[in-house]
Amino acid sequence: MLAKAVLSLGLWLQFAVGQNTPERGPQMSSSNSEGDLLFLLDSSGSVSYYEFSRVKEFMWDLVRPFSFGPKDVQTSIIHISTTPTMEFPFDQYQSSGTLQQAIRDTQQLMGDTNTGKALSFAKEKFFSAEAGARPDVPKVLVWVTDGFSTDDISEPMQLLKDMGVTVFIVSTGRGSYLELSAAASQPPEKHLHFVDVDDLPIITEELRGAILDVIQANRLHAVDVTSSSFQLMWPKLLSQETGYYTLEYAPTDDLARKRTKQVSGAHTSFVLSNLAPETTYEVALIPESNIHYFPPQTTRVTTPAEEISPAQVLISESGPHSFHVSWAPRLESVVGYQILYGPLPGNSVELLQVDGEHNGTLVENLAPNTTYLVTVTAIYKSGMEKSLSAKACTQGEGSRVRHLRFEDVGPSTLRASWDAAPGNVLGYRVRCRRQTGPVSVISVSPQVHSVLLTDLPAGTTSRVCVRPVYRQRAGQGLCRTAHLQPATEAQGYKHRRRA
Image (tube, rainbow, N blue to C red; front, side, top):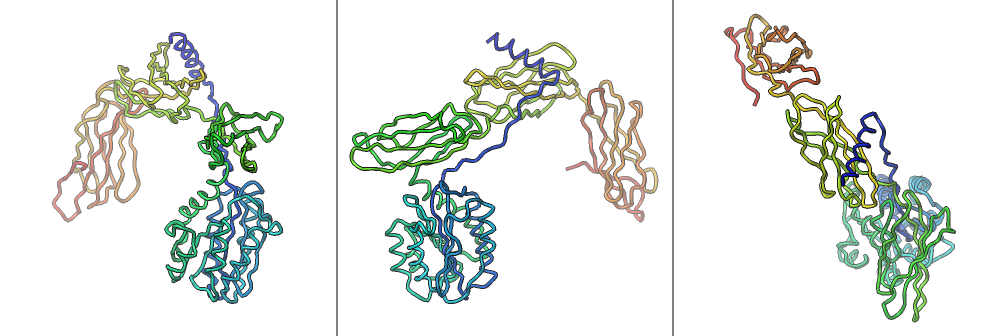
């Protein structure tokens, strides 16, 4: 421990002369979702142009956080009208920017509300390679409706659900709850929403989360992604007796560095560690079954930049003999912190040690009215150390003026006076904030303990603060509210303390 203290002292001296710490890199997102998402959009004449435009905004807000591509989320739109029409196939737009523009450019077709025909058309396109649909990925249908249809929807909707399509319904009109709850996937409280068209943003986050539950739960995906690890999760396909899983993973820019792990068939998750930060990995899960064939599942995960602690050091609750130092973030990979502090200028240094579960401590037994250099060093489980410094100032003992008083000495004029502050005062700074008019600041020598405040409109209040100035810093100010009586009232000054 002494060796670590000596090392930390060397780091402290480096920071004292201005050595910089590494900056945190940009946070990278991971792609955990894969599915074909189809919007069934009511484009008939029963929908106003305003309602149609609001629904388009809702559609884009709903899918905006997703990653789009052949191994991520694909989206398509089918219009409900006299004749169903596909606006664009699933695989046409593979980026957020192009998809957003395509949704904006979607035009209303008008015509009849033949929802049943549109559902039958959707069933064909959901599983059509011509429409860009993919086999073996989750299928999600989001039907946005005003609650009205001119043909039957029950049979084609049931066929879709029988084929594994998860159906979400958003009704912006007065549709029948019984009819729509039977049409939506179960349970209806998760898959059916009734909301006014202007209140669609209220359900966006909830609906997006429900869609994510579908397109993540049935495939390999990553959670708890850090700069050096992530946890893989997948549906239960095997058992201890029926086989095992092979996991293969490699950086996308160097697939020759592929690594392989074997996992028991009883598991549905595995943690990959010792990974590089800010790196995208291709991961494949290969079920090795002695009973059935299961196709491999793949995902792509990007690790974020390495998180550094401490990234910030904060000083608070400063007094004459102590201050509180805190830092962030608090990471699980840090086992402890060392706090080195010493006065500036000077060569003396003190050391405090804090457990890794805490992110702050009180530094005591300090000299008043003194500037300190404080360095917080995080000791990682790996043995690495990261440091960050900050300056802290203790207050002067009794560094506050006392007994601020006011005296009416003429029209629109008050005299403010106070008792001298203790210690080696270099002067006083008086600030007057008028209810109407400018803020004035007056600086006086340490021998002067009163000033005249002029141009105070009759019948108004002013906030007056007097602060002593010391060599290292300003002392603590004393503030009072002064009230100047209207000119028609008897002369004489009234003052009240701040509540």
